[in-house]
Amino acid sequence: MTVKVGVIGGGGFGRGIALSACRAENDVVLWTRGFHKGEGAPYHTTTDLAALKDRDIIFLAVPSPYMSETSTALGAHLDGRHLLVHVSRGLVGDNLQTLTRVLHSTTPCRRVGALAGPLVADALAKGTPGGGIVGSLFPEVAEMVREAIAGPALKIYGTDDVVGVELASALVGLLALALGYAQGLGIGPSALAVLCSRGIAESQRIGLVLGAREKTFAGLAGFGDLVAAASGDDRPEMKLGRAIARGVNVTDAGREAGAHIEGVTIAERVASYAMRMHIEAPIAATTAAVLAGKMTAQAAVAALMSRQVWVE
Image (cartoon, rainbow, N blue to C red):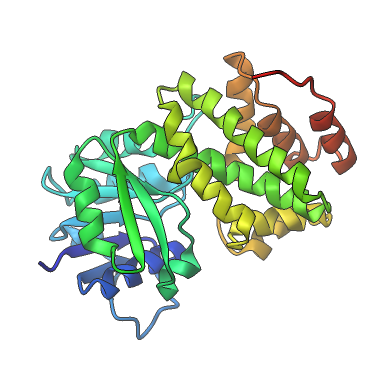
């Protein structure tokens, strides 16, 4: 069966999703605000959100600061039959609201989900082997994502822990930024392994308070995604972290990374939320301080290495 796929976002990730859907021999329309680098691509492009009203499933590859505005405008053309799936690593507001909640509040669609895991734009565009996971309360959402973009080289799994998937994805984005920064400082493999393992434990603590299941952070959305980052999938968060370690300011480092990095905007909010809720989150706090220019590299390493070791 041919699936009518809509994609919102003309950036690298949006184009990657669109190309994956085309490889699955589906009918694809990509919405973009204007200039699009993919002329000659096998999908259709549009600047009119109304053109997506006949789609079966719509992927939103939109940075979190623009999600509410975009989904509100999109919602005017949709009804309850549409399935919506976002691919953002962002969280909204001081209480770390997930983006499926934004989609619920701004559109008439109830069957929504989040696509996460070790997916990067270049790999999606080229069709290299990989996998991801869909978090949704509705099994048909994960099934439709499989029909829309999966294939011999792309495996899609599913879980009903949508909150866990969204939080794991966002927090791994933050950890990948920290990991890239540590690599840029020349930190060795052993210390990087500590950073990864403690980062997942920190993410689990935050996730549990927000209603996620602990095991989700040990799966594709969490640990699997972080393994891909540490293994060198060259995602934008890693590039940005390495650039900051070289002394490049955050704004220029973002341009160098070539993408909107959600971890930059959520670091302070995650750290503040953890403090308010009395959650131990030293990696988030240190990353936020470094990004804000309040802590040097030497101080950041010292702060993390001087923390008390707890037996688990």
